[in-house]
Amino acid sequence: MALPCDLIATSDDWGVAKPDPGFFEALAREVPAAADETLYVGDRLDNDIRPAALAGFRTALIRRGPWATIQQDDADSARLPTLRIDSLAELPDRIAALPFS
Image (tube, rainbow, N blue to C red; front, side, top):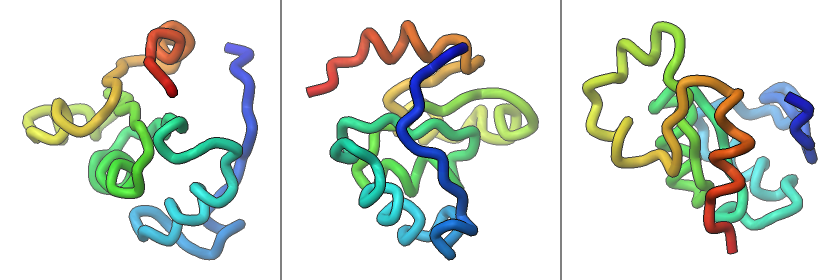
């Protein structure tokens, strides 16, 4: 997809794993933009979307794999994410349409 990337990091790099708030605090310290100007993409409500939203990030819930089926009836899957996508290929156009400040 040739998307630009500012940062690649892992839980091991920071010594804290999702959904621990410390992971998202470390992410907020490292990204070159404010949390509300950053889109966090994940496939799980519990590990990705809820804690990232609590940390102030915009979020994209990618609905694929077993978690898409498990979470499909959870009200947070419609309420919490900034975007809901079925494929990473959707991201460039969807991000371009977001009103980032």
